[in-house]
Image 1 (cartoon, rainbow, N blue to C red):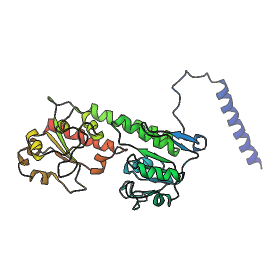
Image 2 (image 1 turned 60 degrees about the vertical axis):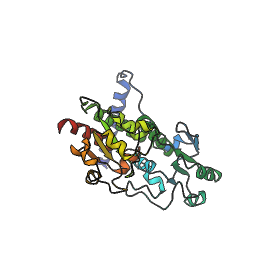
Image 3 (image 1 turned 135 degrees about the horizontal axis):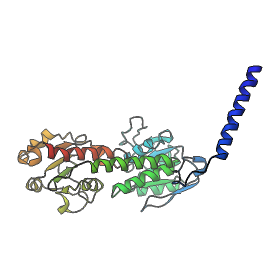
Image 4 (image 1 turned 90 degrees about the horizontal axis):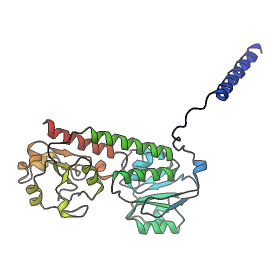
Length: 314
């Protein structure tokens, strides 16, 4: 009993000292307000909106999320909402634990999606008919367009975080991505002259111009896109156009879908004379990393940085 009383006395004394120190301490100078704290109980109901899309009202924190967007799926898990995800589309292959199904934003109807009993569905912005059907079932739908820039991508991540009750984690993630990307760009020496590049989306020479999201990423390094004169975000180039442009760098974003390799490119008629091929500047990208705008876009930026550095160091 004596030991118990002694322990209680020590605890009371410690609490008294802590209270006294807190009460008597000089108030520190004003600092920046702290970042938002995840508190799902107080954060809902919430109205969220991705710029250019309709606002979505969520009465409470979603517990059964269906993601029909591979980028959204990656983002959900990165911000800590993975446990709330009950189903993802057939193309959501990252992370591995995501519950993949045969669902598709373009081929599945509202009844099939509704069978998952979702309280939030995230889909690409071209799934308008599906969205209308789900809204008729009183299922909130957040449509996610392809961003035009990295800033748009950060904003989309933050909105997904807000919609799922992970506001702070999403803001932290976007902040880390921004810092990592800025550091990679700033640490990449500028070449003596602007470098040209070709970004291959498919072996039949569909590509992405500077009007696309991925094109805006390349632009951060001052690279010149040989496809820009073709216009539009995703034109198809002729083989003659590519050979005549003779790009300094070739980036392959069709290595997984179509098994295109640097060796296969070198074997194309006339391509072995291209500067990028002769000097070993054909970069094999991960299709998914190059085609999505979620957390792994940092990996794409790193690949571009390494390729640009290689042109200066041989």
